Image: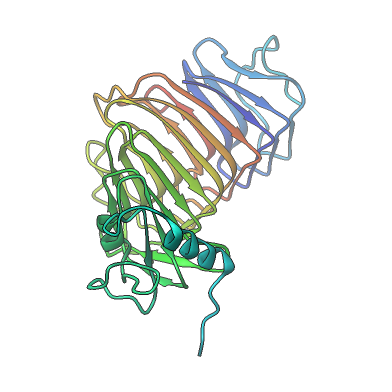
Length: 76
Length: 254
């Protein structure tokens, strides 16, 4: 499972964006806000949830609780 | 009260009348609020339901709604375009416990759904259920108010979804653009091949909105089955979902 997610908004959900297992997903130019469980969650087994550092992730509760790989995921 | 007929419909009818195809060929058929399924589904004598029009049209043909009305659930088993021109609202209200649009076409068949308002009315299970086909294109559609069945069983057809992708084999592609899925008990868009599925797919979602989904907004889940799955999602929104806004899960949920 491989794909790109660009210029989307995830707001007022439980978790905004959740990627698990061996999925390979890129997230770019997106807004993730006001999600009550978590903003983004990287549940991939080898940190294959990628970003380019150009997302806007804020005001979630919390923005993130998983260990993000700074080499592939930049939380802004 | 007279109903204005959009120019796009008139143009389609004119093009159809000028075609050189044999009289018995029906590359384009029509439905209307005043139609009757005993009619030949021509512009002058339209049918009443999408299902009858689908059965009457040639493979690869087009079914066009002339005016705004409900045209009933449909099972699609061949290449076809079901379209509602601008200015016309073609509705499908599914029956309780049923699905509005079920697609069981051949691997080479291309299906296009344009401009449809699909409503579960809080009693029907799914808006679009894709089981087989070569491709599916959904443009300018609304899918809303579908009911989650408490007797949900993952080996059967899940319920409460706006669009449910349930392919068991083959390789296909689909595109969904300018489409809203709202107030569905489970998921707005749900890609979940059944157990043992070998289906592979490539998909594009653009300008898709999932709003007020009871579970999640937009989900790709190959936990039970499915082969290579690739996707591009752009310019879309998932909001006010009970669980996840966007979820990709090729393994059992945590």
